[in-house]
Length: 584
Image (cartoon, rainbow, N blue to C red; front, side, top):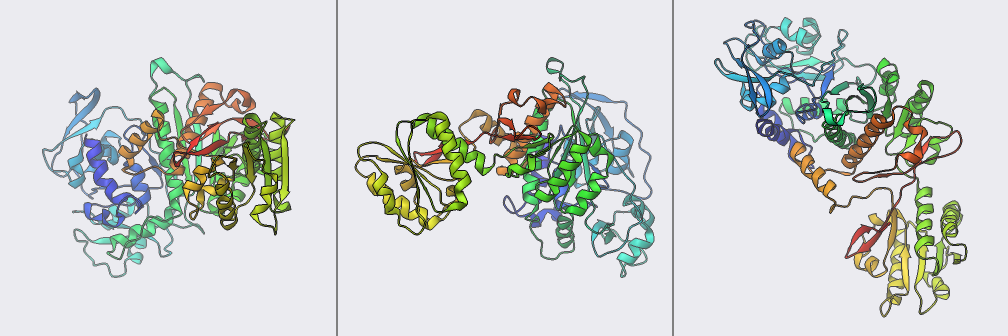
């Protein structure tokens, strides 16, 4: 319960506005925090999977002269877990205690909620005996002042020298960043701490180790850890700026909007890794912030990437192409979780594309129509040559299942929706497939066809994925026309697995998961399991790796003899009882 209490107190301050007001969070802390809003949120999220930051330091209470900490010999078992019971002596700080026990301050705060308001003499702290968290630290170069800072709140007894060592900077750099600083530091004084910049925001690397290995579900590959790399658009520097504005009392900003997709993906990935750690799958996950190409170039120079078993991301097309080339040169599977174009998997055996392209979705819809509507009259409507390739894929899908189909293809460009009337046969059910992404045209077509269905259903309508986003067409019309749509992603909230995920997500993040939360969970779960079961060559056996996720199903096929894998699974959705349900 202690962890949950602390988490709730923290998260109400660190969540973006989609959940809570982020501007309040600094009122909780009178301590020094050298971390962006986004990063701090990460560090306090999970008890089993602690996020370890390289080039990021947290200090909740650091004093220049502290009393030496001796590890306690008193160990107690509480709720099945062993803890050192450490009694605070006057002059000790959370920082000095964390160093003595070689644990993160965040772990101490999780286990001891009262410590968030400071520690006092004779206070007893529970310190975990065994920790799964490892911290990787790197020394930063002397900083260059360029206008961006972290903010430090001076603690009792701190000196400029101690603060400079805490942030791996120099006393002179701090003085230059604070021209109006008094000669004597006072308790509670805010100091700007300059942050080094290399052309673009510094890439920050996180590492977390999943060490738990249950005996009854040991992994299949030599007991070794899986090395997974996530390249995500977190935009940490932009959130550092929001943090500084809040500290200084200026009007605060929400967490940077472009961070949300990467943040949600990361949250889902953590939950997946947590679930698998309890089944004995051991992994090390390195996460890099990739806000731009400069950050990517720097990340690709890191030797960690060459030892990866799988690289997931980035989200941006050109950046993913660079990673795909890197992965090919180093024989590493690289995963595109969000890009849809099939071309990214051409001529690269190591590329896995999670989302099926629009072409694949259309062909899968044709397969569905041919399988279940073979003997019906089928009318395909389009408005020009731009859709010619997709129309051919649709036809291929239909005739692949039914070579005796009654199929009519008509070009409606410049002509009214009534053109379909001459091809609809009375007394039987007709399948009408409309290739249009214009809401105004679809609206007219739906109103026209819906009138024909007033007395008896004579039309079942098939549309495109984009129709889900139309706002000015009544769902009742879609319902009456038995509308079917293809989709690459779909969440069935009635599934027990989804309900369980929702409960876990809400408990950890005090928020509702978004599309990228489910995607991060499914992708991480899938690839950690595949690597655990089949090793690094799993991608050579696409026929063996079908899987069902919460929002994504996986059915990979090769794009060609020398190409990678593309997910073929397409959900066919149908409006039933005024909501979309999966029918395939």
